[in-house]
Image 1 (tube, rainbow, N blue to C red):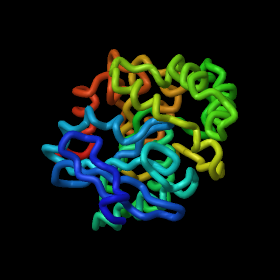
Image 2 (tube, rainbow, N blue to C red):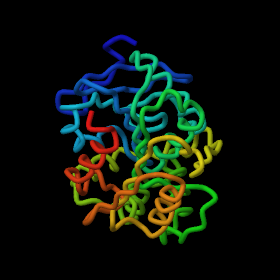
Image 3 (tube, rainbow, N blue to C red):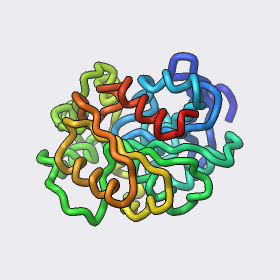
Image 4 (cartoon, one colour):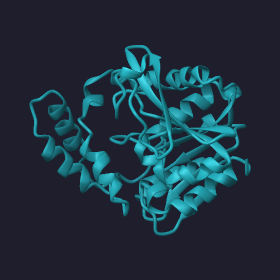
Length: 266
């Protein structure tokens, strides 16, 4: 795509290109040089959530994507298509192999890709992922009501302010980083009126893959149970004191240290 249709950088010093995928494009921002580390943001977020990881660019090339249905992406939401999107981005950048970091819903995409194309991954890092098939406590907040509000807002039938109020009070959206509020304010719920085909996330998909799972100590009990299931399946577990669900933003120094260890000090 030409420069007129390519979004500008959202990271200090970042470089952006638009990568074509079925239905539209994904903004892809890079920073630094070295072994590539592709970053997959969580639900209601976008690539701005990774600004605290800019310090890693001294050793790796950070590759941030606005996933389809979020941020500045024009491709419509379709979670089941996202593993292939990651491969399209890697191919567009000429990356034969890469490290992969998926946060929360982005971790679901990362797990699926680890099963689909393990030969492409150097390592896998999962931050606060959710799994299927693992019994765990509910998140404790009426997610169904929030999803209904998001869907109404996306179709113009609902109040975006009410939607954002619901989500800001959710334990998965709380953070000490004030930048989170600006990112959440841009969420419009359009992912909930796209292709809702499920993308299963199973702990067994990490078999044989060097994997690290990072969890904030103050994240929900459900996320801790799911992290423990991944550790039981062979992942290295890291718990960050003083951090919640958005641990990369709450405790960036500790989070970055865990990522450096995960990618082998490259």
